[in-house]
Length: 258
Ligand code: 13P
Image 1 (cartoon, rainbow, N blue to C red):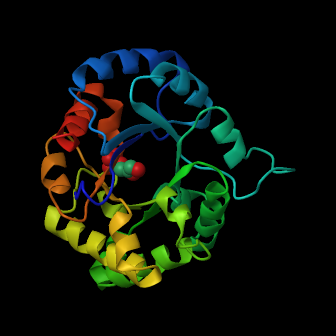
Image 2 (image 1 turned 45 degrees about the vertical axis):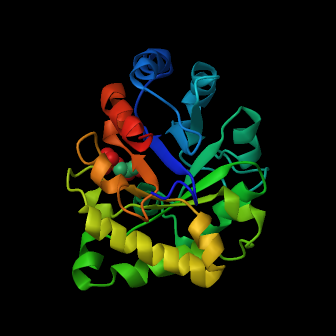
């Protein structure tokens, strides 16, 4: 983390879990466990679409923001089953996860669709959490840095280096670490996050790259968060399983607000 240069962000990704009837109880359990919200740290829960109105209502005025897990690359029209950026912002959604590896793996999302979705989100006040990361095979092949470089470059094609960049966050999520209990070591995660920052610097400039938050995701939990967050280029976490447990999530949020 480098609090002087950029925001720290702790984002829970609930994936396809929880019911609307459980959101308020989650909030009631979480909030007393969070000791402090520092100005340089944002806390967010990213819920399934149908839970967003409930979550926006439950977390209103608490200091915890609400995000979606996907959006359409199209503005409006005949796209059955899709949800637009404007529809998300209209109900108070502040963040959106784009190109999560589960969307790439199960729903055919590509670097190009991730780019189209990022451009769509940037037309609104939404903050985009753009996900990149390698599979185990790709890591073993030794192509992690190359792959992540390409993912970031394509995802940000035609994203101007002006104030739009304030609404871009990158999440490095090694696919082999997601939901497996296998966390990247802080050093390995740092190495790739540094590669990502160098890519951002080559795309824009060093100052712009230093201002962009880069999160780590993949089995981050209450035990390992502190060490991961201590790395200079890891500016927060995208947390799946542990974000479903208010006590574990609160430990991570508190570690980030130290
Ligand atoms: P886990 O924390 O469950 O490994 O999930 C990480 C993730 O995919 C967050 O988007």
